[in-house]
Length: 311
Image 1 (tube, one colour):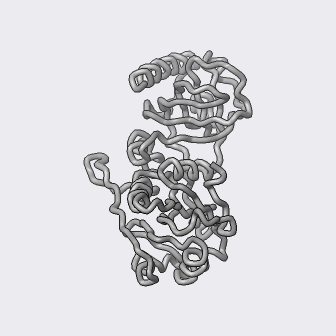
Image 2 (tube, helix red, strand yellow):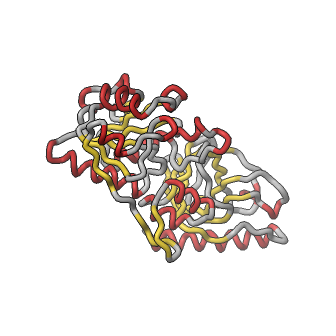
Image 3 (cartoon, helix red, strand yellow):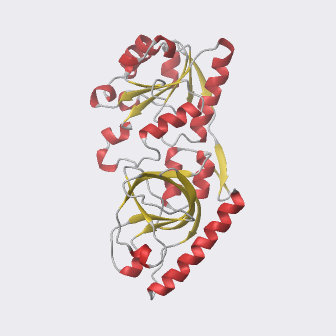
């Protein structure tokens, strides 16, 4: 993958130039982004042109609005992989620093598009914006002489209402615990990446030892208990995932922990990926540890039923 994920314009070689270009943050690589890639592929195929995705790291909003920067749906390396899997032949990653973000649309066109990438076609959504103060749009690109195809947005029926798929919508769904609806927008379950870290050992005392997963800058679904899957240390298995402050044991920091069904081993310090399939219930305060243990047993059985049904 590394040869097809290009860091910086200085590393762009001839094979990534003169193709069909899509530009964006692509956080989540949701169905709308996938449509862009699919339409770019349709344009590229007759002339055997490369499909090139141009993206930015860190996401520009994290630079321009650090006080309210949106949480990420996908880490940078996972975003690159998803873009390649979605149809991009190359992913070009530009560093989103103040210098780049201060360029006018005309400067961006001259210094990035014309001088470096030279696309034959550009495929974008109708609300695409670029350049300083987001002053450039698809009309700016057309006036500059580029042939631009507009891809229509993806609209899904969610909660009995049509909603346009976007990264903001996916974040809102995850914050509310609606992981099934988020999965519909993404075209796959949401995955939280992290590392297994030490906990308080309460899960082991309850006979349900859990892997505590410390995350990075990704968004975390709402507090609650979920059915999902865990991939860690070469094991891929069903998992009961709990997010919250463990109210039965008094105030504590918010944690993400997963009980791995039918899996044993030392997972400390190993990278982990938790896929969220179904919201099961909210966090609750139980009067006794025994009552909590009984509920966890029910949660695990429900996870077993759901994951076996979807296998």
